[in-house]
Image (cartoon, rainbow, N blue to C red; front, side, top):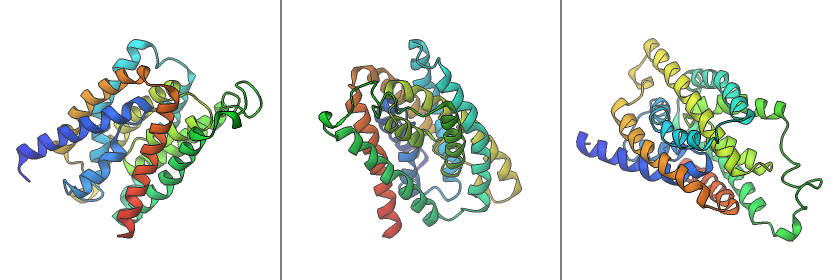
Amino acid sequence: MDWWWLGVGGLFAGLSIAVVTAPVGVSGAVFLLPVQLSVFAVPNPAVTPTNLLFNVVAGPGALWRHRRTGALRGPLTRRLVLGTLPGVVIGAVIRVFALPGPTVFRLLIAGLLLPLGLWLCARTLRPVRDRPAPGSPGSPGSAEPSARTVTGLAVAVGVVGGIYGIGGGSLLGPVLVGRGMPVSRVAPAALAATFATSVLGAATFALLSLTGGTDIAPDWYLGLSCGLGGLLGGYLGARLQPRLPETALRLLLGILAAGIGALYAVQTLS
């Protein structure tokens, strides 16, 4: 593929994906994976560090916007960041030495994200009369997970994010929102965790690339091109978030998770 069109295509892909996913705390890297594999023909396992590179470059756009509004303050951001960091190193090692093949890679993503997205959509679309009143037992507000549960979840998602190169936000977001947390609170924290784990994960893959084949190293040109598009798209998406109602954000997050899970399921079975 011509270098010029590769750069333009990566820029457009990163921008268009990030502007849709940033409002719900997803960097968009999980949707960039099939584009990199099928359109840009990035080899495995290089697609994982390339996605992490996208997160590193694209992340500051949305984070800068959230920082200006004060949305990054609070214990949730700290717990997610500190929990996902050790997990992403473990995940990167697993990805390189235990899960190099694309078939298992896609099957695991489908198995995680498809039911997770459908579950969140079902919870969001459930008639209001069937939901408990706010503050009552079983209501979304009282169903929030404990601090220990959030930290444990962050560690597990860090491992998964290191394996998939998605930073973990696409998993943290649906789970925490499904447990009753508002999207406006979860999204900035999930994006912060995604950015932090992507920086560490990309560095880990760069070190691992010194031990073997060049396919472990990221595609720097494509990753930077997609990342620049995601930088702009993430900022625009973060500006858009306060203008969208909570129900729409929850439904969008569920649709995005289920959509990518279904896409990988089809690719695995075809």
